[in-house]
Length: 144
Image (cartoon, rainbow, N blue to C red; front, side, top):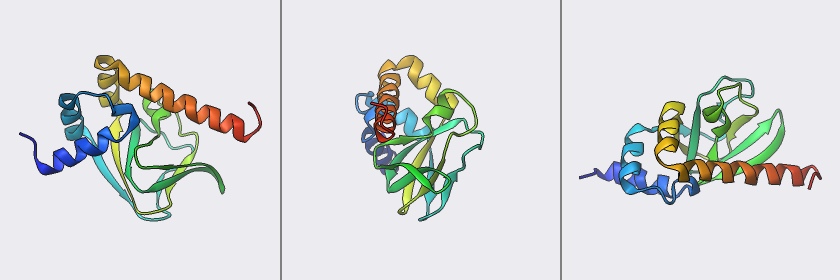
């Protein structure tokens, strides 16, 4: 039996494309492992150059990925951010700040790796998200 809070987390996680086909039993375990993060408008989630080992699922709100004052992309509900550091722990390649009040779920690298090992559809979802961002950024700069 899951609590109302866990059920809510499961529904929000399922709203992220990378978890859309993940079995409910796995989402229950993931819901217990994620940490909720709240950001106020203009509050920074992390800065370019910060060392990171976690990714975030945006469950409500809007963030901007930026380098200095230049916005790279804006991301909203159901999208992920910080996945590069969760896959390959290196300094963050950009900063992320909230535009609106934002709720995110932090997923640590160890949790993500365990999930990807047992559920390849999650890895496929992350690869699709990365490919989509790469296409968008190369088109933005005329490298189509």
